[in-house]
Length: 408
Image 1 (spheres, rainbow, N blue to C red):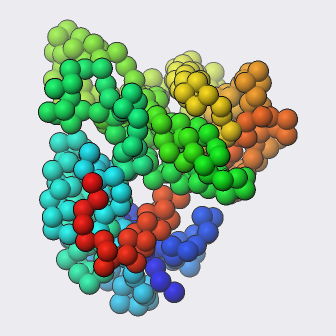
Image 2 (cartoon, rainbow, N blue to C red):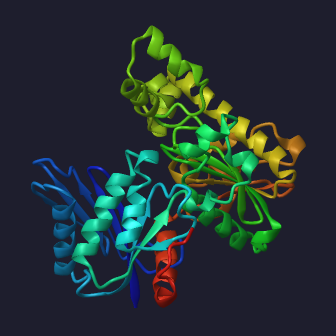
């Protein structure tokens, strides 16, 4: 059996899985792992295989140490690159800019082109590159493939992709809507078509990726026509710690009246805003408990969250003209029945009606939660970005003799 090693390299952590690209979305990966606290004295490696967790703690100096430690541990468990047929390594890369619109076989040239996109994703792309560089050194004989979060949205219509600012300034500084969570939005829109046994080309869909980071997309015939995240993942919906859309004049106001620096404002809007900025927590289970205890800050945070979510659902209903499916996915979308209920409350006049009993069911694979007489099918589709990355990486690796050009 052939497998793909999927790597998601962050600034101080590395997540990885070994995945059968032919697996069903509901199947667990063969192996999952997490390297935490890279660069600290109390580093930690956790590998889950065959229902067992294997944990080790030791200093992990950098990404090289982290991946070397992981590969050795996998080999000891008999599920490493020396034991399995690893046909590709798939790397999650957050930002492909206007350069990459498809998965890309990684070469030295491609690494440098990804590096060129760092100004667009200074918090993410450097860590993604670290993982790529190290993994290519450790596994030089296996094809490495970059899968870009932004690629799904590369073909957005100009009216949705471009901002109403000076066009010369925008072009010079690569300012446009790029969108994020693209792998997830693409995966669940395709999975919904399969679940409903409908051709993807026949469906107009609203996909709601609701995790700590959150985004919504309008998808027509399998292609996105709009999405909430913009040039950065800060735009759009209110999120766990991010503000989502705000009046841009607020930034100037904070700089002028509060004497806040650009970095301080960046930190405020990305890490100290959203649900956490108002309620003090960003875990929706804690938020629900606080609401039940009649905490007013928690209720306010939740109300703003739902208000913004409904705002974009309504906008995308208009953009699509006809909606066939609304899909909830990711941690909050898959598990919080209150969010699903309140996001679609009182929309019967638009053909949207949730079945309360179906909505109460626990997260257990793809399922329908709309009523039988609902014209719009409302679905919960668990996302599986790692499987999607594995499938795309396997496709590129299989076409390797023909995949030596950069996809623009």
